[in-house]
Amino acid sequence: MLTSSPSTSLRHPRRTYRIAVSATFLLQGLCFSTWAARIPTVQQQLGLSDTELGGVLLAVPVGSMASLPLSGWLVARYGSRQLTLLGLFLYAAFLPLLGLATSVPVLLGALVLFGLASNMANISINTQAVGVEALYGKSIMARFHGLWSLAGFAGAAIGSFMISHAIAPLPHFLLIAAVVIGGLLIARPFLLPADAPREANAPIFVLPDKSLLLLGVLAFCSLLCEGTMFDWSGVYFRKVVQADKDLVGVGFAAFMSTMAAGRFVADWFTDRFGRQRTLVLSGLLEALGLALAVLLPGVVPATVGFMLVGLGVSSVVPLVYGAAGRSKTMSPGVALAAVSTVGFAGFLLGPPVIGLVAGATSLRVSFGLIALMGLAVAGLARRAEVE
Image (cartoon, rainbow, N blue to C red; front, side, top):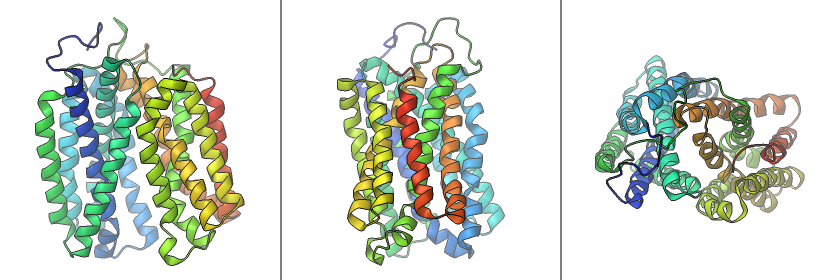
């Protein structure tokens, strides 16, 4: 682990490391979106109802949550470069297992492994990004996450092509696995050799301090909102907005587009106005967008509202992860794992909470409650140590 200058022992220009780490974000996003694009196909092949599918899909976060403490320790012990190579390789290698699953138990086991490798790659790749950000001395984390979002669009487009040409998931998954592993081999020599510096003699693991817990709660609030948008935006447009069949997906597309675009301007905005102001504005945009969709549930205002939500959530997680990686009380990988553990719980809890509240009241009421999470982000950001 580095304990002095972040440029110690670097063989390549910093831009080379940035490109290599950018490639790992692209590869991880491609792997994730490839599976997501074929979920309906797998559901049909196994004859799963929507309720059964929802239960099966919980296996991914189970694997992710189980690997969080382990991933942080492994990054701290062996460095993010080694774990990036291992995590991404396993992520790609486990992808074809999902296409081989011919029964629910087999699919569940494959999804747990897929989730475990996903989080292993996520923690290590973000730790690499923290190191590259330290080389630049300015905020660049959001652009890395923007590349992940772009890869999501690419994976969705490839998936649509495969479905339209009646190509089964297994050959599709094998192709993408080969692409990811090949890309990883190309990027391998140019990954950052050591992580961002930390305090000399700082322990590998200590209990998260107040500042890290606050960052985790910030991530929790924003990811709760993000998880809601991922799973419920189409349902909201169908049931509340009552959009035509061809327009049901507009809300989700609007959200995803501005979330991706926002990540490419968030770093510029952050350098100009500061991390704290950016987080406050992000929370207010989340709240405003959801309030607009709740109060004026027409196609146009709801679409604009979802676009504002996308802009709002775009910068929160990158900024929080960047702040966690600069922790002076624990190594970057362990700090990221600690914050991710709290934050990812929000991503998991958002969709079921929406369902429970909607069942007891209405979908509009549940979305209104999620808007409060945006206000919480804005309020907590004023107290968080992010600069």
